[in-house]
Length: 441
Image 1: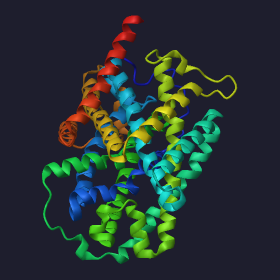
Image 2: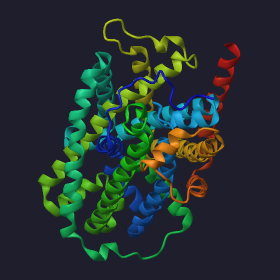
Image 3: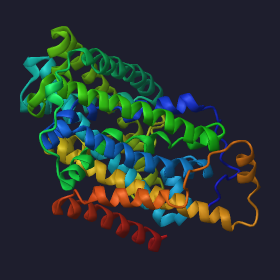
Image 4: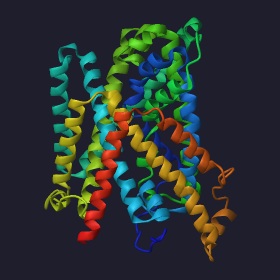
C-alpha cells in the first residue's frame, strides 16, 4: 500500500487557503454556465433553481468526502492519490482514466460553446462550417503555444481567466433590478426523474474540484487548507450560479429555454446592447482561456499514462529543447477536436459529468476507507497532532460518504442506455489495458 506522505515528495508547499480557493473557482467556472441556464430552463422551466439546489446538496456531500480524504492524503494527484492510497493501484489507475475522460469530454464540450459564442459576437463567423474552422484554429493555436513550452501557456491562460468573473457578476447583480417576478412563478412541479436528468447535466458547471486538487503536494497545512478552500469556493460558486439562473429566468421568462446565449441575452434585455456584447466577449475569452488551460494540463495525463506503459511509449517522448510532451499534446488536441466537431454540447457534457460522478463516488468510498485505515493504524501521531491544531473534522463522518454515494447513484439514474453503454465500453477498455500491461511487465 502506498505511503500517504513519502519522503521523496519534495515539492514546495506554497499554496494557501485563498490561493487554492481561487484555483478551484477558476477551473470550476469554465464555459458551461454561459450555456446551461437555457438547458435547465427548457427541462424545468421556472423550477430550474431546484436542480441547482440538488447539485449544491450533492456537491456539498461530495466535497465533504473530498475534503476529508484530502486532509488525510497530502500527495500530488488529488483524487488519483486519494483513491490509489485507499484501494490500491488498479483503482488508482481507473481514477486516472476517469480524470482523463472528464478533461477530454469537458474540453470538447466547452469548445463547441466557444465556437458558437464567437459566431454570435462576430456574425461573419456564424454557421456550422465557420464553427468547425474556429475549432481547428483554436485547438491549433493552443497546441502550438504549448508545444513551445509550459511558461508561455501558463501566462496566456492566466490572462484569459481573469475575464470570466466580471461579466458574470455584472449580470448576477445588475440584472436583479430588471426581474419580472411573474417569470419566476412555478406552474407545475417537475418530476423527480426530470430533476435527476437535469441535475446530471448541471453537474458540469460544478465540476472542477478534482482537477484543482491535483497539486495537493504543494498545499500548506493540507488538513486545514483543503477543506477551508473547498468550502469557500463552493459557497461562492453556488450562490453565483443560482443568482444567474434566477436573473436570466426573471428577465427572459419563457424565452430563456430557446436562448443560445442565455446570459448574454439577459444582459442585453436588461442593461442594453453594450452589456450583451461585453458578456459575449467575456464568455468567449473565458472559454478560450479554459481551452488553453485544458490543452496545457490534460496532455500531461496522456504523457503519464504512456510513461507508465499504459499507452504507446511514443506519447511519453519529451522535446529536447522545449521540454514539453509534444506527441501527447498533439494526440490529445486531435482527439478533443474530433469530439468537438462530431458531438454536441449536451452529449459531451453528460459524458464528462458521468466521469466526474463516478470519480466522486470513488472519492466518497476513499474517504470512508481512509478513515477506517486511520482508525486501524497502531500509530496515528500525525493525524492526532492535526486534530489538536484544529484540523478538519467531517460532521457526521460515519454517514456522509454513504449519503454522498446515494445521491450520486440517484443522479446517475438520469443516464440513458446508450450513455451507459458508451461509458461502460471506456471503462472496460481501460481495465483490459491495465491487465495486459501488468501481465506484460
